[in-house]
Amino acid sequence: MQALDALLNRVSVPRLVDPAPTPEQREVMFAAAMRAPDHGQLRPWRFLTVEGQARHRMGELLAEAARLNDPQAPEAVVEKALNGPLRAPLVVVVIARLQEHFKIPKSEQLLAAGCAAHGILLAAYAQGVGGVWRTGELSYSPHVAKGLGLEDGEEVIGFLYLGTPQKEARTAAKVETAEFVSEWSGQ
Image (cartoon, rainbow, N blue to C red; front, side):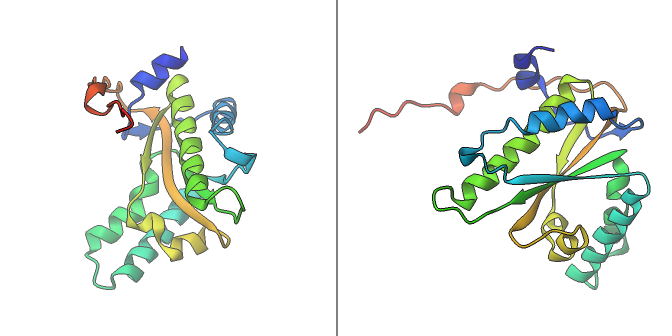
């Protein structure tokens, strides 16, 4: 697949089934993440892979966080959290590793980690792997961060759900770029 094809046509694929990406496909996806723009070469990211039975434990962790956030949470909310990680055979937790640096602010490091996550999704698409980036309030829960083993200065910025598309991916909508681009004349 040509690079421009991936850049112009990648779409989120929320309905995913087995099999998960192969070890070779994963290596390509994580190698693509390492090419993210990274001022200072800090590599302010890391990734956790969650699959098999670990997805059930992750669901339990998310359900616990939902109950902690709202002890009166409807059972449907808790069930959704519990079953969330089961929507794909592989979940990649994207973690920003924000460091004190004299020249590179944490906001720039956070953006770099987001670019690394996008690199994973682009490489997945280029290899025929379906993927979708999910967040939600539980992504930012201190309970979830602790349960996943995050350290000080680290934060979850998303969960990448990866697997085999259940059906053919939709066609990317064409967006007129003129609505988002304008010239600044210096005035």
